[in-house]
Length: 347
Image (cartoon, rainbow, N blue to C red; front, side):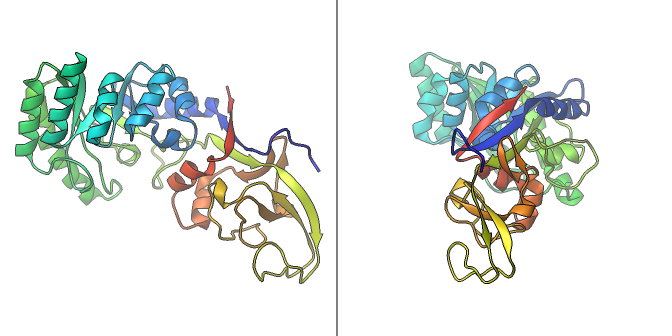
């Protein structure tokens, strides 16, 4: 049995592949388009600070979901613009202003609080107004309200109207995408009337694959090597593999119990017990190669189905495959699977 210095799982992240993915993406951008790297949710499980710093020379903007995520990027040395995609709570605004984060705003209440906090701290805050083009999650629903917010921003010496954005709820569907784009274009024209240099952006990874081009491409999952739907628009490769220590091996006879419950083996086999359970980020339910469901901290795998490397047993090399097994999407797999893992970056 192998001896491990640590019981932690190993997430091995190849920054060279990340760089290649970015180069593939940027070949499709217009010369005037800005590139925003989405590093929310700890860069989809890959480590936000490390990914952000690795992309520093490549991107114009960063995007996170929470003010706390933006603060962590600032503390890691990121001095470029950081957009917080979710409209802030009132309690988040003071620290967001202090760390020079760019706010997503869709209400006068939030905007008034940002003005007040910016005035108190003698700082100027950047604003990206959030417009609802059909997803019905966050955002201003009508152009009249958008206009009143924009007017308030440009009339305040403590704010700067840096941009406006929206989301596509189904970018692979041309009808839905066209409807959203038409709504967005009206909002774009309104905002440009207040600031011709405002960054108006609509396309995340799905919109980018659909060929939609606005002032800035706001990309997340593509950076990490996955596509939200099948497309030959660009080629990207997964940048992370996940390994777990093999703690023990044992031979089970036909009819032996294994792990919790009444499960019995159907034939003699050698199993490997790896230090990876459902508390480490994957679901409890048995999938291909496993013997019974996962425990909280361990999984039994048929030894024939487990690839052993210097990092341990290979748990994941392609989140798309696991996503299909669990009837979910790679986003969910990636954002959870490194919860108790040491991250190793290959440069």
